[in-house]
Length: 362
Image (cartoon, rainbow, N blue to C red):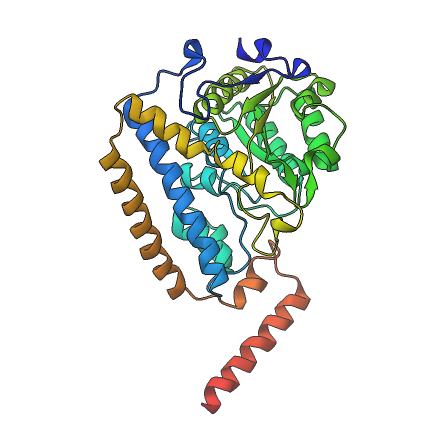
């Protein structure tokens, strides 16, 4: 129903709560349990605190290059909350919140950005692929998993993400075309945060919307207020149900904003105006959801302070454990190929011999 009503060619954007936390589309307000709403809010706060702290750790020289997520919490948590635990999440590199919500631990997520290969090894029951840096490749990976799910007749849907700039890459189109042809159980969320590093959305494509790209591949597409967690949940739920019933993939464009830098190696003040950033700060996804929950008496002001304090303490304690972890040089050899080539075996043996001699001399 929603996918038909919100035609991307007419630039109709799905929204349920506005930036002031006011319900503007009561008929579409999801009937979520209060516990689930609180869980979503707590996840947003944890993601925001962990994100801000990660940037600080990086600036202190305690973490490697990091990809900030601030401002995109609703686009990620609202969508991933529509999944079952047995469904798959295939991230790009700015899906920190989605990964945490679907079972990746904060320690595992941090260890990855800390530079430890073990940060890509999740618990066996967590259906999340590791961070993917190669832009667009995750769409092909997601389509492959979705194809396997359909072939094996598994009741599993795949949710994947890409940025607005990533939609200009070939694998985005190849993956969607393949999934459309075979009616694969796949949902693709474009996190349109306005900028592909320093390239504005307007310079990335001449299309009026990114959601309308779905039309060329014969699948539904919809534009959603990506800072509205309820709208993201509703749109993704319909797309997931559609995929699970064998009707094929859906493309969701989440209109959101990257409040921070592209990565900690980027300086957005060079190419963005402060007025633009301030405009989007007023549309902060956490602020509007918090107002909504307060008005519904689902949380209190005391809860807001307590949840923020607990998140802050948890993040600091977790990072203490991360800093105790060791990055083993052997991991570079062990996890590059499924079976280690002879040349890498010789290099590893050379390294091990060197370490044995060095330890013997000590």
